[in-house]
Length: 350
Image (cartoon, rainbow, N blue to C red; front, top):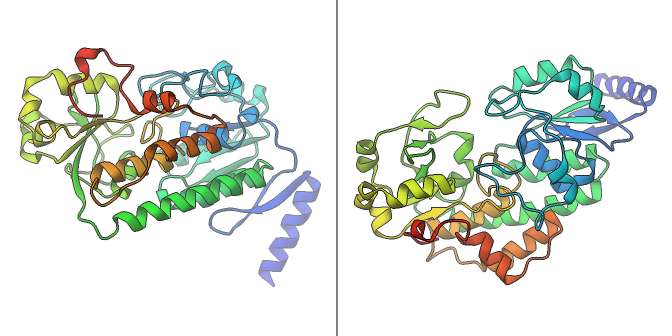
């Protein structure tokens, strides 16, 4: 009876508000607008999700499209995305969001990242605007298909959402099964200008690396919102990881030109890998829908003998579906390669 009464009340409210009822990822009923043409994400993972579902419904960015971790180009992105204004973010490292500006932009819906470390602050702030808002869990790789479905349903893009969600579920299951019985590969995640910033083993920044069959050598509790935990090189020497995953080209330079790093097993064995970042980073900063492709790339790096896939084929399929781009072999080579780096940086394998 309580359930039926609640459903009745929500139905009345939805009718009065020109809205509809959908179910979130926890099977709870949520009221969202009937008409959704203008959508904003409070964080980059949410804004990039909006892009995958329908770039025409985006109203603004959190940060500049091109940055140290994301190589956004007109060849791979919808032209509207590159011309969107930067409305800001709650997360620092750029322009702080102005709620009055957000109100003036009149989004029909705001997507809030439920797994964000400042989720409560973000949610409380946006709730004050009375803008229609939904919260989406998007940290865990295995939760992503349902999250995509929920966001797409809220945006009135259910068919598109099912297409993306089904594909994501297939890839995620394939990776999960492929690495489930394998010994995890010890990795170090190199960030920062000197490569000596990294993430704790349970941070959402390394969610994809752990899911793909890796074991983070740096065990700790995250000390701040942005992560980027500092270590010294002596500590890294004691870790001596089997694989080094490098976040950005700046970090890659630090790793490959510093002679001290040549003492590490991963460098000696040419097991240093720069994360692809065209048009968005495949792994982190932000941890977006690109991780669906990223976990495949990581799985074949961590377990090259056991996990074999045709990355050229997978990349073309993924970009065609999620970004509506048909890639040539040369474009795939560029995305996977290090063509954006000066020749003297290219000391290790891709």
